[in-house]
Image (cartoon, rainbow, N blue to C red):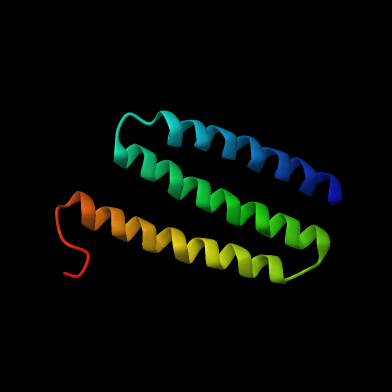
Length: 88
């Protein structure tokens, strides 16, 4: 099972590199934000795989915190792009 988890980890890291390319070279701000969201999902996947391999559950807490911050960032950017103030 560890072999499959290593393969999945390498695939996740490869996909993260592709997302970083989209974040850096994205033609528009929404394209970059989609790249950041997908990168966040991949980071949580990497945290889950590492947590399974090492049998340490606190790594999943890092993934949960990452998702919460990513969600707040997405909401903030969406409000900014629609022209609304953050306190509305």
